[in-house]
Length: 268
Image (cartoon, rainbow, N blue to C red; front, side, top):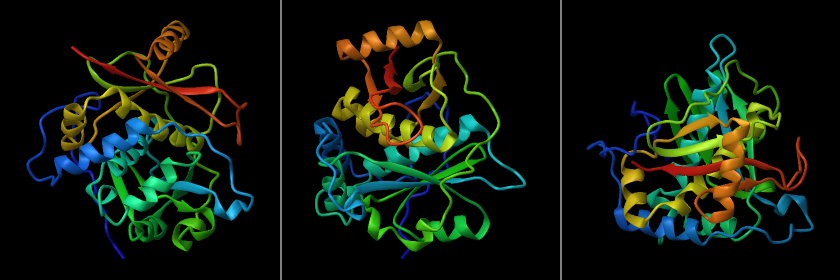
């Protein structure tokens, strides 16, 4: 079944601008979705059976002959998660609402894979949302049991997600910014999951009206690498409630409790 909302607007990544007239968005649904994200606290115990773990799968489009830039790919990944979390189908009696409720009431997990060619085309048929940023594309799928993951996604490789490029370090003028930890070495796949989580947490920093405008504008955001000095300031901002940090459970690549990404809103 194909049921997706593909983001194609070419907007400044840091700008929360006016909505494109062609994008159908239900403000009441966004408010309900936003309420879920604001109330999210995470945690909980993992189920005994690994197949019962709830996770959001993500797929990064990485064509062998023409791979995307790192910044664009991570930005698309983060936007795909935000768009899905604020989608009208995830609210009220929507077909994704129950799955989103269950996932947000458990320990949040995201797993990124790569796809190309026919694999990418097949992944578009699985419930989720695709976002684009320049030439980069990524898709986030409706979360569910790991054991129930659609075969079209499950067969995709988790490794091999490295692409060229470095994240900018300069701050954008305004908007949602996801700052990565300059002291951690993570693969693009791992980092895609982290910025995806940060885009969810960024909603906590938005009012309901701001969340509506952000969703109407297709969740524009910027992914940046913090300098050591900025990172220290962001940690202080997180402690003060002015920013929101992602703390990793430490299942792969990095130590438990590591702060991987910090989301902030730069307002004029």
